[in-house]
Image 1 (tube, rainbow, N blue to C red):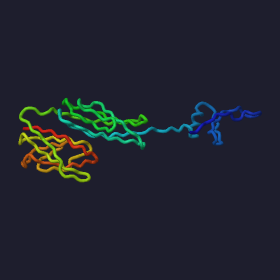
Image 2 (image 1 turned 60 degrees about the vertical axis):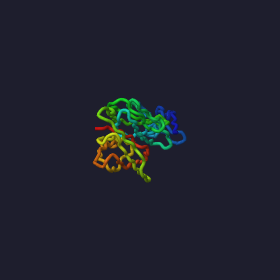
Image 3 (image 1 turned 45 degrees about the horizontal axis):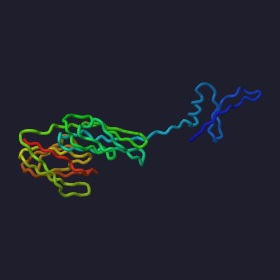
Image 4 (image 1 turned 90 degrees about the horizontal axis):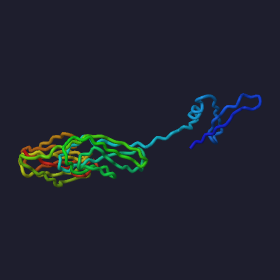
Length: 235
């Protein structure tokens, strides 16, 4: 760290009155200062007011989320730190009732209990106290009721190094809508034996296409291997 010294220059017999000077310890040079404001100018000129900036924590928004009351749902929060070796801790506000976040992994999980639209703010903080946050919308739809019921069951299919298949079997109705809630950043890559639409990047709605009640889809996990949650509504 630079250390600056103050001293008097001049002032001997027959000379001008002494003025104050600033020098860097051990640097061998002195910068005179005289008059209001020159001290700060001298310090800045000699680079003695150097400051260091803190770490920068960046949280990636998972995008808008959709869930169904009474059905398990999860969202992975991802964050990075400008400094290597930092351990991040996570927190969140505005979560739907029934959901909570892991302070160590950033995984939000649980079973939402109350329908509504929630503004969620996820925050990551490192060991120095630096933090970042991201806000996203989470819509919880009411659970289906009346008009019959159906059940969608997942089972494992084939898999590869960065993909896997899930088979879906629907029972209880031949007219149904299955909602698939992916865990970010995993996405549905393709489907078979079903009509599919995507209300948002991580939500797929599937309806019969005349091929029966057994169908499936391929997942591109992008590092997130947690299976999606599914819910079924009849009619």
